[in-house]
Length: 443
Image 1 (tube, rainbow, N blue to C red):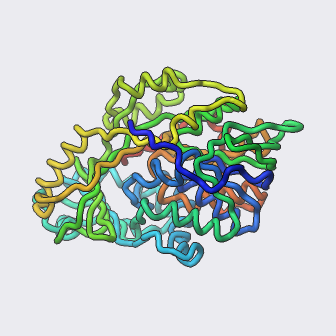
Image 2: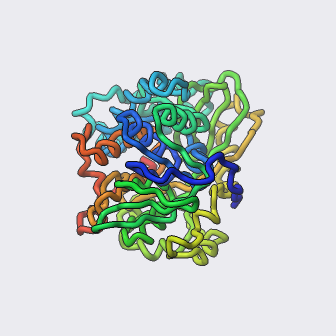
Image 3: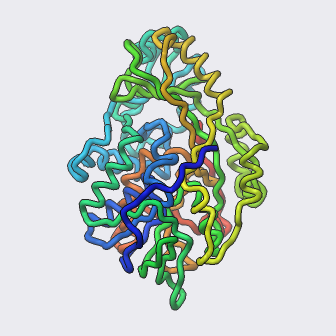
């Protein structure tokens, strides 16, 4: 695990007051700040390290409707519209392109697993459809496997993670948001039972609302504020190659591989549905919450005991607000990739696509994914503490849906009518006895 030291910043102190404080500068926090700033709401975003430097810049970059949980679909459809509009809002191009996504099948009978999902999606009139052998192999240019068919969504696409979060942050700043990097939020104080002040390592900020968008750190932060957010981490990894001639366009995945062609002509490649899972104290704390997920995902999970197990066992579990926190110790979390998984992915992609046989890998990237028991996010008020909101647990598919998630959170904070039904994303489902219905992440 590599820990990046605290960046040098221009702010010695934080602003004394604002309306909303956002905890976390990933793409979810960035989009929330943008939406609040668009509404003229004073907002301060605090990031313990540098914005977008964990999962938000180290993911595949897919922006997809295909394979989404039906509960997320209205929000994802709206997110696609917001991605289209984003350059005009922020004055920069985050690389969003509609180039299509395909899930490839080796045998025709394998396509049957998608039929129930397609049936559930009928009310949304998606352009997702089955493709036969000829079209599938045309999409997978030059492949050696001769796919039997697949599921294809022409209007899906991708954006560039290494660009998007920083550009959205800068867009929010232009609209009036204050962005403070190298500044951990330790917690918040209440007055009369509701949020009144965020406490950061650089000073206190009087505010009416705190939005927790801390990714993998959200559960730890919330627990110190006496709020339960069941959330575990899975390790995601991908490789970034130099430009490759003659490879497939867009994005695709199948048995043992996944790819995305970037705008620079290189590819992000890796293994579909293979995730390292470290056994840590939270594994036992939330064991019962995750039983439904275990039933669906155990084949994709590579359980292990290692360095991370020890680090989280020894990590401070609670603190006073005038004490140094884990957020100040671990500024930027960049875990070591699962090299065995990426080694196998390299073998698979070279065998599948002859064009990749001489590929040059610039970087092996890895990041922790914040996963909830039902694999959909919590975008919600914390009912027990007025003024405390959470937007976390996007379970590996938060990058694409982020613009809409940011809008929904802004609507909840300001009391506007939400653009989608927020009920499926309520935090209370984890503590009120609601049935946890898990959607397979790997699809």
